[in-house]
View (tube, rainbow, N blue to C red):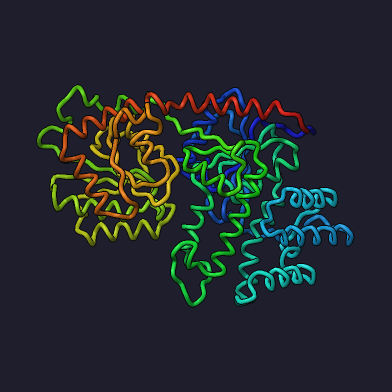
Length: 507
C-alpha cells in the first residue's frame, strides 16, 4: 500500500484544532483559504490524560491529524538493536550533547540515520539509564553544573529528555512541505521531518518561543529552585530553570538553522530571530490579516453619528482573550477598579474561555469580588465575540507578551479604539508601521505592561473624549482595510507553499 502524501503538514504545539486562541484561529483561516491544497498536522500535547476534542469545525481539506504526547512514556518494547547499532547510537547522542549549542543539523541527521538504519527508536533508557547514558550524564554534569545537586540534575535531565525522545520517535506523515508554527519541540519535529523526508520546512513564529518560555519558566512552581527563589528573568534564575531555558534556546537555534524561510509578524520579532541565530537573508515579515467583511459592519461608522451609546447608556469596556497568566487579566481588573473611581456608569467584560488555567481564572474571579466589582465586571466564558464587538466602546489588551494580536485588528476593523500594553506589534498596530500608515493617526492608546494605572488612564482618555474616540475609530477602520486584509497574507503563503512544493527531493 502506497503511503499518502499530503501537500502541507503543519507541526503544531498545543494549538489547532484542540485549543482555541489567536494562533489556532490563524491556522484555521490559513487552511480554509486554500481548499486546493491538502493539509494534515501533527499536534504536540503534554499528555494523553488531557482531552483532545476538536474546538473548530475543521475544513474538508484538513485530514488525518496525528497526536504526539511529550510526557507519556511508552512502555512497549522498541525494535531491538544490535550491539553495534546501539553503540553507534549512544556515541551519536554523546557527541550531540557535547556540542555546546546542539544546533548542528548534521549531528541530528547522524542520529536519525542511525535510528532509521537499525529500524529502532530511542528509548528513555538509552537517554537516562544504563552504564553508557549514565556516563554521558556524568560527563555533562561535571562539565556544566558541578555545583548543583546531582539528584535534582538527574531528574531535570530526565524530564527535559523524555519529550525529546517522544518527538524523535513519533511517526511522521509524508508531505511536500512541512510548516511549523513555533520552534521548541514542534520545531525539532519539523527539522526531523525535513531531514527524514528530504523536503523543505517553513517556520512561522507568532510570538518568539524562547521569550515566552522564559516567562513561563521564571514563574513556574514545578521546576526545582535552589535557596534563592527570585523570579527575575535571566539574571536570577536557578540552575534547573536555566537548564530548561537552554533546551528551548537550543531547539530554536536548530529550527532557525534548518528552516527554508523564517517568518514572523512584525519587525521587532524578526530582529529577535536574527539575534537568536536566524540568517537575516531567510527571514521575512508577513503581518496577520483578517477577513474584513466579518467585522467592518458590526457597528455604524463613527462619522455617521454623535455617540452610538446614547446619552444615558453605560460605557462598555472589554477584554478579549484566554484567561491565562500571560494575558495578565488581573491588570485589566485593577484598571477597571481605577476607572470606576472617575466614571461610575461603566460595564466591564472579560470575554474568553477560562478552562486553560483554572487556578488563574479562579484567582481572577476572587480579585473581582475582593475589589467589589461583581456588579461591574462580567465573565462571559467562550462566546461569539462579534456579539460583543458590536457593543464595546473600548477594547483592552493587557498581555505581558504578544506577537501581533488578532483582537486588535478585529476591534479596529469594527471601529473600536484599543488600549494595549506595549508588547509585540501592539504599538505599530495602533500607531502605524510605515510612514504612510502613521499618517492615518492613532487608533488606540499604548501603556506599559502590568501597570493598571497606565491602563486606566488610557481607558479614561478615550472614554472622556468623544472626538478622540471618533478619530481613533475612523483611523482603525482605515488602517486595517489598507494594510491588514487577510487576502494579502494568504497570497504570500500560497506563493511560499508553491515554491517549496516545487523544490526537488524525495516525494
